[in-house]
Length: 335
Ligand code: FE
Image 1 (cartoon, helix red, strand yellow):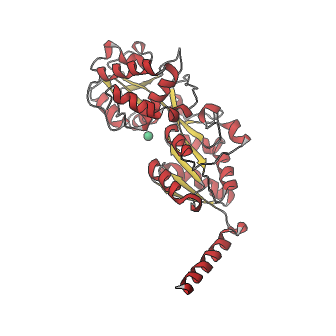
Image 2 (cartoon, helix red, strand yellow):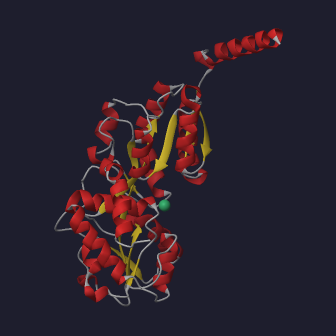
Image 3 (tube, protein in one colour):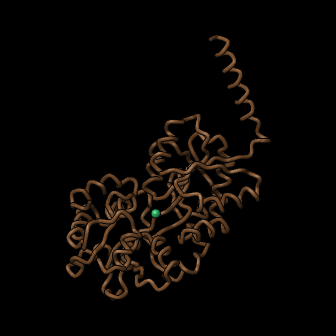
């Protein structure tokens, strides 16, 4: 027994010595809720350029955060990569991300798209905006998110489930901008206007719209981009709401360096690189998103949707007000 323990102790020491052997240790580990097809091309470029090998584990945001918590100081992960400021905020709250103070990241990523304490940074941008049927709606009839509750849209509105973090973040941002009472009125009026049950995803919602089930809805811009890429003649279009007021709700995919990153310095250098021109372009383009770095142009399919004013309410609000948003949607009968 004692002999076994002693042998185990030696193995641990040997492994620790190996891990501490800096010159040969050129690898990073990323926990990602973005799928392989989106991240691998960018990782490969970095590896080729720097010799830094990047391995990754993909899973949903929730399990990855749990895993980081459970692993604590023993985690092999250097970075967490996920979507939605609500998820990034939650990860930061769980104390699994560290503060990064980087002039490069502060210069490349606008303040409202990153955590004030530097625990996460937006890397790509998506708009959660209005989609409408070009056959049955004149865009002149549209104006704001709240106006989707107007009488004229009775029985004509499609929404995705309120269980999805995207809608929780949208409603949280509306609370931040309009206050809780007005937002509750808005959400109630949406529920009154629903054409049918809520959808499990944005794509199914738009397919229902194409099939004539409803005329207006709210979706993430890249899901529209995917449909449009497959079918350029699709009879749907995006509309940019709230242009005279707070602006379109945008959200991010983003990343943070883990609290116990074994290679924190390398992880920061990699994150900084991700905020620069080439990776920004590739990362955004593959999913029809906008680069988070405003100096980098989106791809032509995305640019063709036109310019818009985005809400610059700090995205950390999507996290701070998330539980208030969930309770509000529940009260309003939004399932
Ligand atoms: Fe998505």
